[in-house]
Image 1: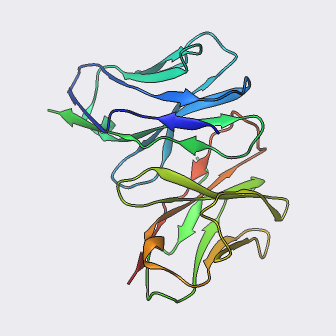
Image 2: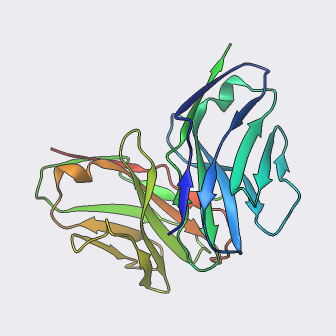
Length: 114
Length: 115
């Protein structure tokens, strides 16, 4: 069964600094996508960034980028120039082509210090 | 951006009572989901729904749970006889075509408290 693991329950970063959130996953599938979702205090989940397994180039969205290491089954999220509004719970998620189910990790709470 | 709408935002019920959580997915979306999140824990898949039937469900989604799309716009989750451990935030989500890379559009959730 596919699993998603986030080993950092909580991280802190100074405003304007860079932080990296870790995610590992386990799968035997070859066709899949990985996602990072943000859950602010309002608790509505918002997509931050996604990566297709077939693409070697790491996805970027403005201040957010990923480090996708397919062989290591690792998918970390880098947030540059951290802002107070980045404070939230961040969930790594996985979905393969053989299912409609998105599998989420346990989340990392990010605190941004002024 | 289009939104998934969930009502109510909070629901309090007594153990053993039936509850119906309501969702209006984005109008041209075809795939619908229910997830739940117990406070401070991970977001857990409950069920996916397409073409008026369940496409997948988790072990959590037992006989006490059912889903329905009664009128082509609403998507409901019914819990027949609530238990204390059903207390959680319930999220509805939808996608357009079910493609593997599509993002899930989430509603803002219904906080269910079972007393």
